Length: 251
Image 1 (cartoon, one colour):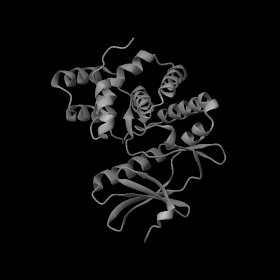
Image 2 (cartoon, helix red, strand yellow):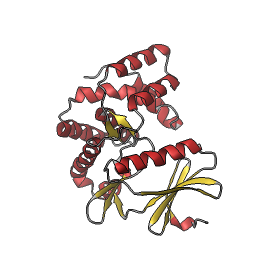
Image 3 (tube, one colour):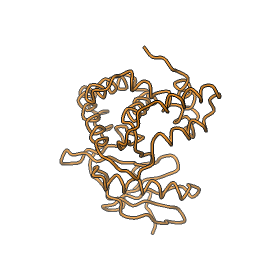
Image 4 (spheres, one colour):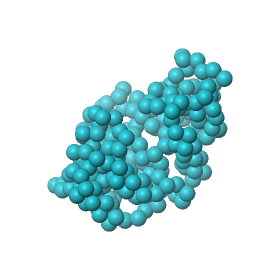
């Protein structure tokens, strides 16, 4: 099977997403690890079975010597597109954004990898000095154990608002089970990385209000999450994330 270039939906690092009729093909680069492709497909299947609204996984396949994941096509616009077009109502969109995140976190998928294990492994792989890594591991070990579904890359571009107004969440490659506040810390940093600091602060305020979580508690996760995310990220993001990883005290 060949893919026509005019059917490209999105191009991401190490992968290209195509529309193919009423399905979507995510095609990975030839050197992309097979284990990571299968892990992403398994995450998507487990989250789907847990009751979260995600594109239905249809198959994992080889395409021109490249691994690919086929899922159902979900028509609509991303929440990011709506926010970009209607900045005056950004607060309303962010409120819905938080509601979707909290709904996801209300589900359980016991076979997903544990977020704490992933964070510990990433901290060990970071370029931070030994003292900082020790402090981060100690803080992480003291955090409460949760089993909530965490998206791991929750941002408005991964949410499709369907034609009937309901929402579907894309891209589950980083999914795990763990603490919702860690997922919120990651989303906060994503807004910062996108240069939308106002949205980051508004998002954090809404998340804490809607989840009845102290802002300071989410902030305690930020150095941990930043350190973990600094591993394998783009060079222009690494310096920013390492700066956050070295911050231990917040007002």
